[in-house]
Image (tube, rainbow over all chains, first blue to last red; front, top):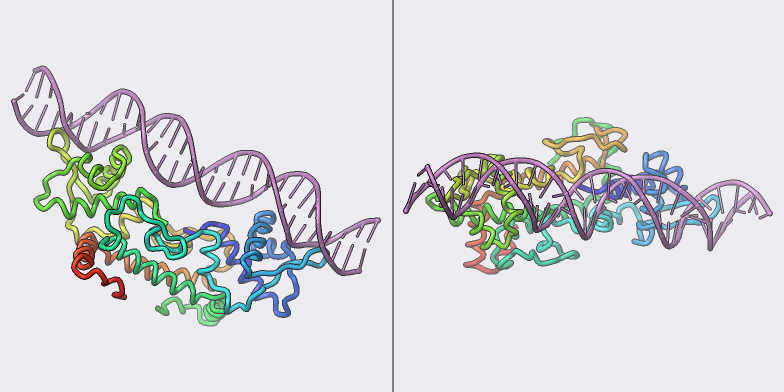
Length: 152
Length: 152
DNA sequence: TATGTAGTATATAGGTTTAGTAGGAATTAA
DNA sequence: TTAATTCCTACTAAACCTATATACTACATA
């Protein structure tokens, strides 16, 4: 399961992508209120997103946050990794967060690893395609055609 | 990431499936030693697997655990769910462990949910296909042909 | 029937992570 | 200079994870 932090981050990003046409800064308070995210918690999240290069901010009066990259350049895989770490279910199949499984005898011939490598590959693939634009597109599609749940 | 509990469980199950041809009970101590799993921790895990119907046990001298179901009837999805709960990354796309996302405004038109529903569907699908037999088969295949990592 | 082996059950300890709070310093616009 | 806003540091309560301790129950076999 994703942490609340990650969920909040995704919601905040999608909100910003939808709201901020001209890239005018939007105040933390607005996002917090609109997306039901605890104010102080959101501050930390937005700061992380800024440090990761996805957002930028303007300080002082009439300040706030806005997207630093285009909505189709920000994908969910990035966000998940930033807050929750690896997408893989086993450390031995992670790429960015690779670690040996200490119980493992031989990684190269491990059938368990092979299965989870496939799962990881597919998940990463899907989450990378899931950009902010794509999410917004899906939302619009579902609004028009409420039974589009069987697309796969 | 999977918990250690789940990883230990999978390793123990695969070990039992490989080892126990005639379904003679194998002692906790054997599994613990062979798979590098802390003895006492393993006890609890095996008990859970038994209560879930995957294993059965024989008490007393020459006792131990053995598979209750056939190796192609036990899949990784089951095991993960037993110890780690939902496979889904968001509660709102889980089936067995469904829960509303409290921040969510409208589940039916949520683009985020739509993305994670797809990821979940694919993951569950893959993990259900990953039976103990399949894992053993993959292990053997990798032993024969060490570069079979690009099967997808 | 005695004895030892092994599974069953419960409690708990220590560490880590999660989710969130508090307070204030720094910055900017009016 | 004042009000609004981000930025930064520290703190806390609760939950969860991993593992161990202790004692008990059931069973096989000599």
